[in-house]
Amino acid sequence: MMETTLVPVSEVRTTKRPPPDGDGSVQVQLDPSVKIGNAKVFAIYGKGGIGKSTTSSNLSVAFSKLGKRVLQIGCDPKHDSTFTLTKKLMPTVIDALEAVDFHAEELRLDDFVFKGYNGVMCVEAGGPPAGTGCGGYVVGQTVKLLKEHHLLEDTDVVIFDVLGDVVCGGFAAPLQHADRALIVTANDFDSIFAMNRIIQAIGAKAKNYNVRLGGVIANRSDATDQIDKFNAQVGLKTMAHFPILDEIRKSRLTKSTLFEIEATPAVKAVQDEYMRLAAALWLGGDPLPATPMKDRDIFDLLGFD
Image 1 (spheres, one colour):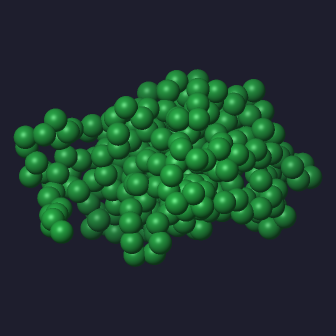
Image 2: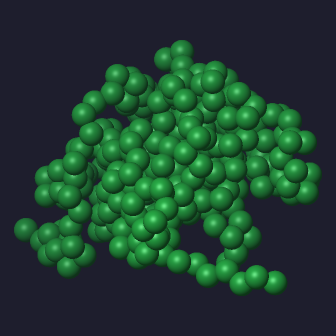
């Protein structure tokens, strides 16, 4: 059997591939012919457990209420991104491929695409088995299948909801498709530290792809003083602010988006904020050329007067 050696992209100088995303990079390079099309594409990142799936699903509904055709793609092995939209855990693209022994030509669209609340189309990419494979392959196969089945031609907005704060080449792969990356954070050190790492990943991908920073979504936070301090330092801005609200937690427990539960004054305010965010994202805006901080500098910046 012929042996193969993984060579860092930075050492490959004779190919026609794009230059590396970073020194020593072994980033996944997706097929450049597999482009999403004319849809506006957003990638949602943030620290694990910060509420990205809740944010993504409610943002998808807000776009749909603006009359947009929306596709949400969950990029997490636990495949619960679209849970509140579809009311149950849906099979993943990897599940569908395994069922046909990875003969993708045998798949039908309804094997891996499911309609959720208010017409939002839902896909769970899934992930490779623990400790094996690469998330970039999963993302690449998902987009390729959607393209082959022409679903992307009938879509106005695509939202990638991406696993935690992992910034490896695999789970950074949605950045190769996105127009704007949005970062969900809380008003605490750990969330902001993860945000800084994500800014670094977005900056690396922006060297070779169209993705740019779109802004910050403050979540589960009544105050935003630490976020504001960090934003001012690196050149970011907060696009939306969602407070600590028990109805948000309960909505997920009842398999519902915030647009399906009783619209108390507090819930109505959050619904309005999602609608405002969706409208602003649809109109577009200038990218934010944020400059990440050194790890030590974040410790010095936050939590002190």
